Amino acid sequence: MLAVPTKGFARSVNVHRISHDVLCDWIEGSLLFQDDRDFLSQIDVADTLLDDGRYINQEFALQGMKGAWNELRNRERWIGDGAAAFVRRKRVIRRGNWQSYPAQSFCILVSLAPYYDWWTESEYGEQGEIFELLTKASFSAQFCGWKVFKTGWSSSNPVRLRDIATEVANLLGEQLGDIETWDDPEKKEPGQKKEQGLDLLCYRPFPDKRRGIPVYLMQCASGAYWESKLHTPILGIWKDIIHFKNSPMKAFSTPFTVTRREKYRQYLGQVTGLFIERCRLLAAAQYNEKWVSRELQDRIIAWAEPRIERLLQVSER
Image (cartoon, rainbow, N blue to C red):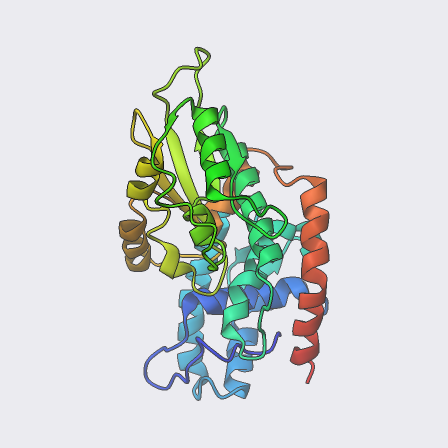
């Protein structure tokens, strides 16, 4: 299996102290990124954690695996037949290599990264842009008739807030408001300050092309501290920048999974809008099997290959 994450896997003696989200990502990553086998069993995973000292009792370790398998079943059910792995009894089985499931592989890699001390991502630009494009593709596949416009600032698209706001207003037929207060070209902070947390504009026009349509303003967060952005974009700021005739709604997308009910409710309460985590993102395959374009697939594979190679090298030590 892959090297055991250095975070999220505290030693479990009488209480399970391993994060289920991280554990399941590690299991799926081990299955997808290593070519030595097509399935993993509960005993395989438990024994690896015993050997690493994360558990000291096999029976207790296997109890922890039952919870992980329940979560893996939820992931499979929510993603659908497009899931890269499926559960049969006490085994999780892969459907193909990771290159055949680039979107899910990308999400797993990004989600695992914060839990390895040695794995640091010096440039988030490419990662962030890929995730915005994935979210755009997923939303377009699942919401028939909706338009999705990528607004997010990036190194390849260093536009000012004024330009973004003008384009959004023109697309929606709305009037610009107070841009001067929020568009400060002297600010040095990257990303969020430049476009005020707006990465995607999602809207559903009618044939009459008049105002008064459903609109989502979406933040796409794929970095280690994505939870700190759950409150963005701030609708109050955007209502000041653009004079919406009808109030837009908020949306948030992340490649991390949130399958625990309590945690999901907490995050949903902070988003106060549409919340798209990994399972909802990848569920696009239920509407269109080819929802990820060939161009985007190739870009993901090129981004992922060196990171997977590094992960495998560390795992072989």
